[in-house]
Image (cartoon, rainbow, N blue to C red; front, side):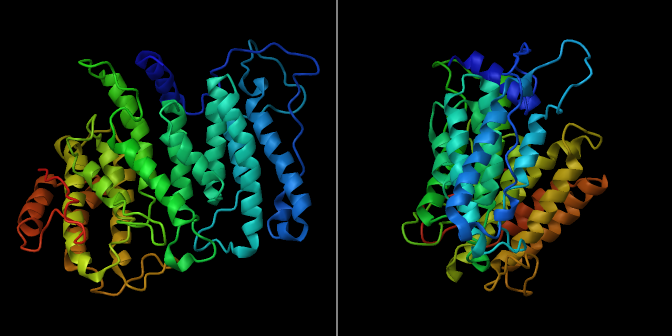
Amino acid sequence: MPVQRFVSWTLLAAGLLALGAAVPPVAAQPGKDDLPKPPPSISGYKDTTGKDLNKAKGDFITFAKYQAEIISHPRIYSTPQEFVPPKGPTVPSTDALITDLGRSILVPTPNSNIGSDQADYIRELGVALDQELKIVIDRNPTPVVRLNAMRMLAAACKSGAQIHWPTVTGYIANPNTPGELKYYAFQAAGNLLAAFDLNDYSARKHAHKPKEVSDLIAALQNAIVKPGAIVPAPPAGVALSPEQIDVVSFIRRAAIRALGQARYSDRVPGPGAPDLYPAHTLARVAVSDPAIQPPPSDTEVAEAVIGLCNMSPPSKSTEKEAYAYAMADAILTGLTTFATKKAATPLDATLPWRSYGARLSDALKAWRPLFELGYSPAKPLAFTQGAAPKVVDDVLAEAERRVLLPMYDKGSVDVNGLKQYRDNSIRGDKKFTHSPFVSDPKVVIPKKN
């Protein structure tokens, strides 16, 4: 697809997201214009799927076929030419359909009370939805219908159902997947990585086996660092326009946010899990590594910092201090980059500064407990004083005082003070290193000012 045409579609997706009115009006077709009839509720199966598995599977397929049919129906996208009093059932919006689907999705988190007795429900509903929504995404000729089917798939992925992992990885890794679809595939990936293994919440395990988790993380990393992974590379000697750069940054930010849901900095525990270093990829974004093109935007940098704070340090105790210093530098560099515009122009309103300030503050506070040997996801802010290297506590205090609290309370953001602290107290310390992983010193974070 030519770059210009691709960008036009992607800008439309980026601006409207739902694209609910992107299809021309459709003339009424007696007998064919009626919306599909909603299926019976499946909520009763949430605790009883295993008792009558065959019946549950059939009802899940009926439910999934309805989701595929309703999101593809022309009336969902029709635009009335004049005001006409509605007749019959109200035509739902795409947002309403996706919200309604979400009510049937079980989301396994440490405080959700979802256990192994609901595994059958998650698995079989996931299989049905994956099968039916893929048909729409792969075969429907209308781009907006395919886009909204991908949005439905992203909502379904909150369950962490194992069937979805190779599906989403395939869409992300496929160079022929349009950027507007990849945007929601990245959201789907983040939802999968955010779901816990409902058989073992205490270990912060993801909801699939190490290989499948690693495959998804690798696809996200490639999408972030490889030029042309989101927008087809222009001909040699032709640069991306500012509008095209904005499109790449908008979509890539979703990939960065998804990768930030990975819970381990250096590998996925378990047999067959390769060393991937997702923390290194996010650190490269946080410090605006020149090899990542186009350069990360301020909000991409902020998302990378938030993601870094979600990752457990290396499991070996001998690596934790080196990791803490390297990541402290990346986090502070990212914060100074992100906050520079706000410090220079206190009244700037081009970004939701308070929202980002609150998210960054929460992320940094949640980073420190991850160094606790007996960390429990059910008590995410509980920690023993001194469990984390001292540099982690110091970074939190300095970032809060100089940047994050002022950003939230509309105070004076002190970027220069934070930068001086980084240069003197972090980089000036003899323990400082740009190699976060002792076991692999070749993994280096670029030094940026």
